Length: 149
Image (cartoon, rainbow, N blue to C red; front, side):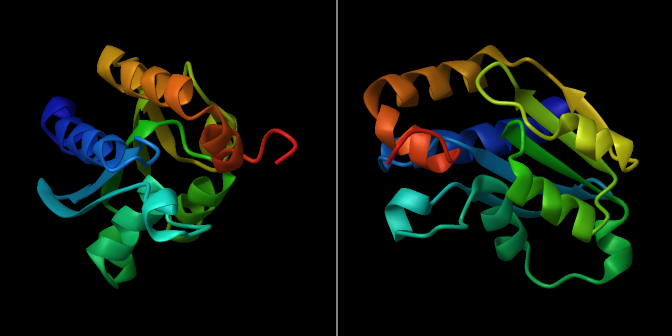
């Protein structure tokens, strides 16, 4: 079940990498239907907030609160604080994560706030991030708020 929806997120991450962006993709799903997909577009659009998860939520459009509350967010990388905040704000009850070897900052926060967090430890998700970080280490540092700029 998770594989089909995670594959949509991975497809978005691949597209992001091909555009020179951070390869993080996401898909929002409720009742077996895909509500939206997105990818990190910070580089492509010069945005400070267009992470994979926030792009996905924006692409899903404005939804009634009950829809968010029965949805699952699939993301190729463990959410940062910005994206975890959106999950908590909209009370998304489940987050399925492709990998957290590369980055993990909020899984405990999400779980403490009642979010069901599942990590798939997907090799392709990790490989996309590894390739990106090797090619663009400065952009990665910027994306996660690390480094001296």
